[in-house]
Amino acid sequence: MVLDVYLDPITINCRKVLAGLDLMGTKFNLHHVDYFTGGHKAPEYTKINPMATVPAATDGECVITESNAILQYAADMGGGSAAYPKDLKQRADVNKWLLWEASVVSKLLLTSPSCL
Image (cartoon, rainbow, N blue to C red; front, side, top):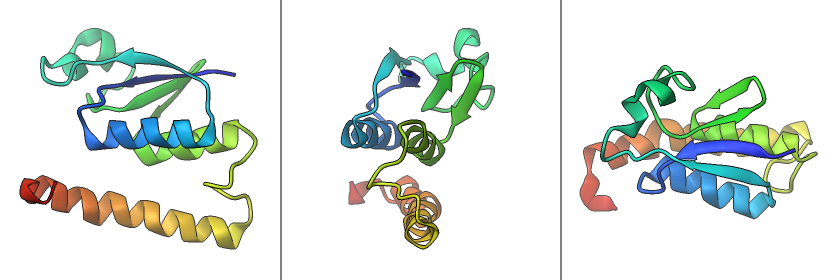
Protein backbone atom coordinates (compact mmCIF):
# COMPACT_ATOMS: atom_id res chain seq x y z
CA MET A 1 0.00 0.00 0.00
CA VAL A 2 1.08 3.55 -0.71
CA LEU A 3 0.08 6.54 1.39
CA ASP A 4 -0.80 9.84 -0.30
CA VAL A 5 0.67 12.75 1.65
CA TYR A 6 -0.22 16.40 1.16
CA LEU A 7 2.33 18.84 2.53
CA ASP A 8 4.81 21.62 2.07
CA PRO A 9 8.27 20.80 3.45
CA ILE A 10 8.64 24.44 4.47
CA THR A 11 6.76 23.69 7.71
CA ILE A 12 8.26 21.83 10.66
CA ASN A 13 5.37 19.36 10.94
CA CYS A 14 5.60 18.50 7.25
CA ARG A 15 9.36 17.95 7.54
CA LYS A 16 8.70 15.73 10.57
CA VAL A 17 6.32 13.57 8.50
CA LEU A 18 8.79 13.29 5.62
CA ALA A 19 11.59 12.31 8.01
CA GLY A 20 9.40 9.76 9.79
CA LEU A 21 8.16 8.18 6.58
CA ASP A 22 11.73 7.93 5.36
CA LEU A 23 12.88 6.40 8.67
CA MET A 24 10.15 3.77 8.49
CA GLY A 25 10.62 3.09 4.78
CA THR A 26 6.99 3.96 4.08
CA LYS A 27 6.10 4.28 0.40
CA PHE A 28 4.15 7.44 -0.35
CA ASN A 29 2.99 9.73 -3.12
CA LEU A 30 3.89 13.33 -2.39
CA HIS A 31 1.37 16.04 -3.26
CA HIS A 32 2.86 19.50 -2.77
CA VAL A 33 0.54 22.02 -1.10
CA ASP A 34 2.13 25.46 -1.39
CA TYR A 35 1.79 26.93 2.09
CA PHE A 36 3.05 30.42 1.21
CA THR A 37 0.54 30.92 -1.60
CA GLY A 38 -2.34 29.61 0.53
CA GLY A 39 -2.59 26.20 -1.12
CA HIS A 40 -3.75 24.77 2.21
CA LYS A 41 -6.83 27.02 1.99
CA ALA A 42 -7.69 26.17 -1.62
CA PRO A 43 -11.03 24.41 -2.17
CA GLU A 44 -9.39 21.32 -3.67
CA TYR A 45 -7.27 20.89 -0.52
CA THR A 46 -9.99 21.73 2.02
CA LYS A 47 -12.04 18.89 0.49
CA ILE A 48 -9.28 16.65 1.85
CA ASN A 49 -8.64 18.58 5.08
CA PRO A 50 -11.43 21.00 6.07
CA MET A 51 -9.20 22.33 8.87
CA ALA A 52 -6.93 23.81 6.14
CA THR A 53 -3.73 22.68 7.84
CA VAL A 54 -0.76 20.77 6.51
CA PRO A 55 0.16 17.97 6.53
CA ALA A 56 -2.61 15.55 5.68
CA ALA A 57 -2.58 12.02 4.28
CA THR A 58 -5.05 9.70 2.64
CA ASP A 59 -5.22 5.96 2.32
CA GLY A 60 -8.17 5.34 0.05
CA GLU A 61 -11.19 6.86 1.79
CA CYS A 62 -9.30 7.23 5.08
CA VAL A 63 -8.14 10.81 5.73
CA ILE A 64 -5.51 11.43 8.40
CA THR A 65 -4.65 14.91 9.60
CA GLU A 66 -2.09 16.00 12.19
CA SER A 67 1.54 15.02 11.74
CA ASN A 68 1.79 12.61 14.66
CA ALA A 69 -1.39 10.78 13.64
CA ILE A 70 0.01 10.39 10.13
CA LEU A 71 3.22 8.90 11.53
CA GLN A 72 1.33 6.54 13.83
CA TYR A 73 -0.90 5.40 10.96
CA ALA A 74 2.07 4.88 8.64
CA ALA A 75 3.86 2.77 11.26
CA ASP A 76 0.81 0.56 11.75
CA MET A 77 0.11 0.43 8.02
CA GLY A 78 3.58 -0.98 7.46
CA GLY A 79 3.08 -3.74 10.01
CA GLY A 80 4.87 -1.99 12.83
CA SER A 81 8.17 -0.31 13.23
CA ALA A 82 10.95 0.03 15.76
CA ALA A 83 10.05 3.73 15.68
CA TYR A 84 6.50 2.94 16.88
CA PRO A 85 6.62 -0.40 18.69
CA LYS A 86 3.63 -2.70 19.21
CA ASP A 87 4.52 -3.35 22.87
CA LEU A 88 2.07 -1.21 24.89
CA LYS A 89 4.64 0.04 27.43
CA GLN A 90 7.13 1.00 24.74
CA ARG A 91 4.38 2.59 22.66
CA ALA A 92 3.18 4.57 25.68
CA ASP A 93 6.66 6.02 26.01
CA VAL A 94 6.71 7.01 22.32
CA ASN A 95 3.19 8.49 22.62
CA LYS A 96 4.28 10.51 25.65
CA TRP A 97 6.97 12.20 23.57
CA LEU A 98 4.70 12.67 20.54
CA LEU A 99 2.08 14.38 22.69
CA TRP A 100 4.69 16.45 24.53
CA GLU A 101 6.16 17.60 21.23
CA ALA A 102 2.73 18.53 19.89
CA SER A 103 1.71 20.49 22.96
CA VAL A 104 5.01 22.03 24.14
CA VAL A 105 7.59 22.19 21.37
CA SER A 106 5.18 23.36 18.70
CA LYS A 107 3.90 26.10 20.99
CA LEU A 108 7.47 27.22 21.70
CA LEU A 109 8.24 27.39 18.00
CA LEU A 110 5.14 29.49 17.36
CA THR A 111 5.89 31.95 20.14
CA SER A 112 9.69 32.06 19.82
CA PRO A 113 10.74 31.74 16.18
CA SER A 114 14.27 32.75 17.18
CA CYS A 115 14.75 29.26 18.67
CA LEU A 116 14.67 27.77 15.18
